[in-house]
Length: 202
Image (cartoon, rainbow, N blue to C red; front, top):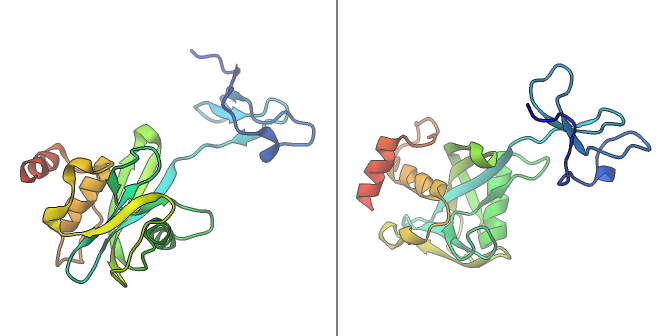
């Protein structure tokens, strides 16, 4: 059984967290009373710094002719690879607001959110990704600070071998499969059978 008082050398700056006066801040991992797993805690006052999964929001945004907005990443991870405009939610914004903000920040794109296309669980990196379907209000796009270049791609122009993340492929495939339909429940992580079928289609 792991030591429940192991110092955490990667803990956040203690002075930025809600500890009591004179505390050293959350710096050890321990199991709080009434819980069943280790948390980052302050041994002086008992404050618990909960670390919860992050929410990523983004959109499959299309122009009137069906072309899809993609951004080539200017930052790690996967710098130089293509992705949908997406990123972490900010505090005090809705998921729709976050997806629209990311489209503007990464591609200077104005979008009108339609509906939720997919919810993907990525537990290995503690993320939940929420991808919307959206309509571009203008085809005029340009790279934001986090993009090397941006573009509108017809389906047969998408650089499938240069997409940054599996969830980008999943969302694009779901978008394609659901064209003309708006009454579907949001998609979830694809099954192995669906992945094999999509692979054969590439």
